[in-house]
Image (cartoon, rainbow, N blue to C red):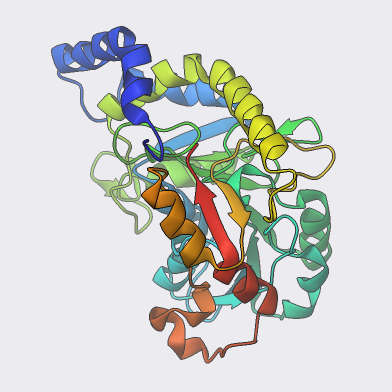
Length: 343
């Protein structure tokens, strides 16, 4: 059994994908161009966001957002310690300080009731992560941010396609960032990502920073990066986006089946809050004696994974922040029990 069967997915769309990719090869336009523009327009249509800027990865999407917000050394950005490292890594990359806030034990997303206590005069943004495919508590988080005059950047790397009170993930705050890594709900066949916003000036700035801070060719207004998503990956993502509705339906059906079959098992199954949908970027359960359970499953030919075994505040690269075991107990407890199943 595959943990995620990308081969089967490719086989389902092979003719369309091959045609699109060969079309890019024939055009000779591999960087920017019509496939990139078309994907960005289609992503706007899907999410409802006014602007979409495709980019090289989900990590670059977050980095572009922080650079466009002028977040720098001396600033602080609040986020969760229970996520993939990219979320906090980009905060450190721009020179700012990651400030961690513990998670809600049911959803594994940042606990909004604990955010305000972490805000200081140096706080410039909050990055909630819509982990495992369910949006964070965006209304509460946006309200806190508005009260303090700071920006919310949704890390929607695992939740593209999820809905929150009738609105799509990536269009729930000033900036939404997502990833098209192959295993994501909407994945390309390499690295890719996107930034969404309804702010015209911010979109213009992100578009410039994405190409080395250029406004016009060889005229550089900002310090930027080479953060473009290539045309081949955009073409592939366009094909998959056209079928994405079917995939979301399948994800919901498979998630419901898992929940039914696990109802009497000694596990903590995923919990989705009312008014939200879950795209199951990972189908993760909590189990006691994880190593023993995982070993038994692997012996039966069922692969498992752990997303994520060590919270960010306990990572060596963030030792300079001075955290210790017990600082974020919910994150630590969940990290010791979480296990992802094939999906």
